Image 1 (tube, helix red, strand yellow):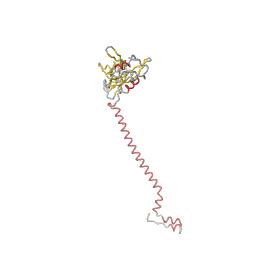
Image 2 (cartoon, helix red, strand yellow):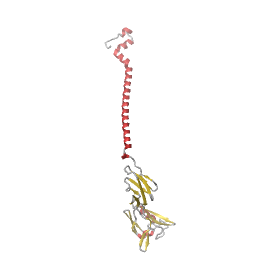
Image 3 (cartoon, one colour):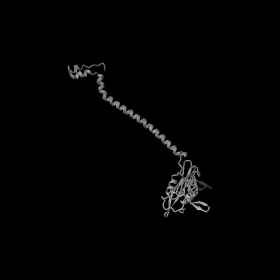
Image 4 (cartoon, helix red, strand yellow):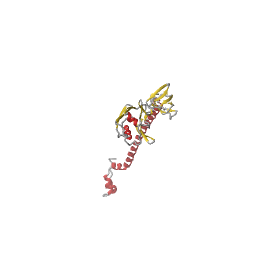
Length: 270
């Protein structure tokens, strides 16, 4: 077709605009112009086909990933090593328990004989009457000293020391105790609460001052502690043995089981 030429002047005549325009175009150019819309449509279809092929490949990959994920889930569900273990207490008011995946299944009876307690000292019967916790106590200069849980405390007191100041100094000492200016009727006295269980408070100095504020009492044979509650360990009966613990949280009774005792007698099932 490239070798064929058309004399458009002969067709349209001399000086005809159409003849001049057609003469400037070859048959190949005219052919290209004629099929250009079809070429564009073909290119668009090829692009759509490529996109569909890519989407199909991505969908196939996604299906494979989903199948692998499902298989993994099925394996986890059938694995005995990953099966959850639950500790169920027959009475949560008595005690609660928690177990991990390695806990041995079974039913275990645990009797709580005694709960762990912290020491509480202080009594309204004081060597002096304290009606105002902000007033100077008039104590002889001394050092109030005590220890608890391996922590020793020494607090200097003078004649201007008040009950409130003594409470503040004790609470800021870093010792595991909480001091309070307790009230009985119209009078005040010092009260100490141990914040750790199974740890006794040992008073090592300032006995006269401690007796004046109600922690100690002077007797003919010396000073005695006005103890409201003594420090005690927690005690349980388990499988014929008596087990003691410094707190109410037991981790040494059943492997991989933690038991928190709240009151007397309880039974746990895993």
